[in-house]
Image 1 (cartoon, rainbow, N blue to C red):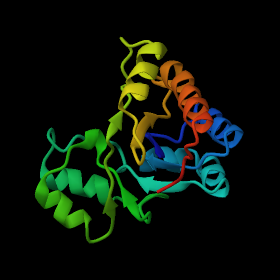
Image 2 (cartoon, helix red, strand yellow):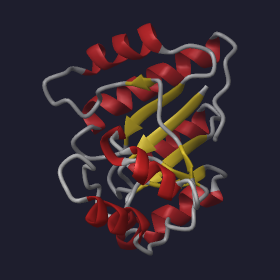
Image 3 (spheres, helix red, strand yellow):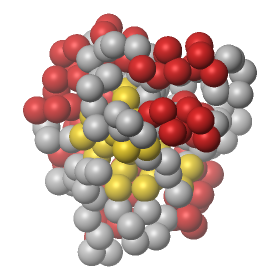
Image 4 (cartoon, rainbow, N blue to C red):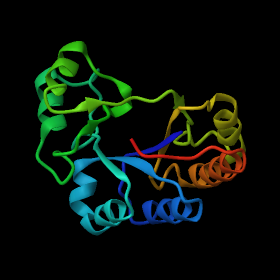
Length: 175
């Protein structure tokens, strides 16, 4: 299985994620916003030094459906500590074919098959856990969010996912 985290790094959350991953001997992929990577280079370095994958998640997380193509591409390709990554995940999972065509020149574009909805403040941690358990399959790419808003749901769901699936013989790898 492949755990992935969007929108970090975040000093209050990402290090807790790293601790949980280490506890379960799991690797993951972190799709970081360029502006956060710029703000927290020490946390970005901790992710790298722990052997996890870093992916580009644009500079400021613009939704392709709400801005011009040019503005979105400028933001997606803006130079940052993550802009030279091999992987790219479009914010909100939204991308037009022509944007995809352009980005494929520089990146392998990665989506997910399990969205945990940990960012939904109207959901409880137990609901996120239930979603994860219902949808995760062998080979799944699971997306969590290492943000302050998602942390109250994400951290318990992440630990449950790591514990449950590790006990059942699965391993977590990076992309």
